[in-house]
Image 1 (tube, rainbow, N blue to C red):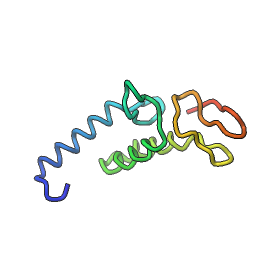
Image 2 (image 1 turned 135 degrees about the horizontal axis):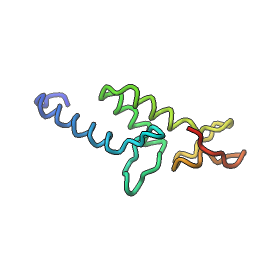
Image 3 (image 1 turned 90 degrees about the vertical axis):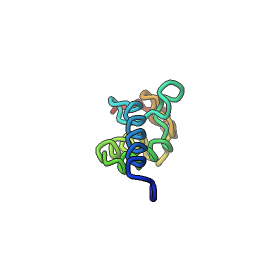
Length: 100
């Protein structure tokens, strides 16, 4: 943060990176908001997580997070906004299985 001592800023970055890394769901490519209470992919959260990953310098995880978050948009542009890895979208065409 501007004006903070460099060691304090680096400690904050290290803590954020550790928290995100601990919540990373590698087989799908997203950061769970809370691994015990909310382990699902949430569109809104994943969009913010991708920004944080990018700022921390991990462009691959930032891109993986956005890809996972936006992978279930159906032909009408609908995205359910939350997934547990089995359901991608509910729309006019009904349910479709997630294939990542």
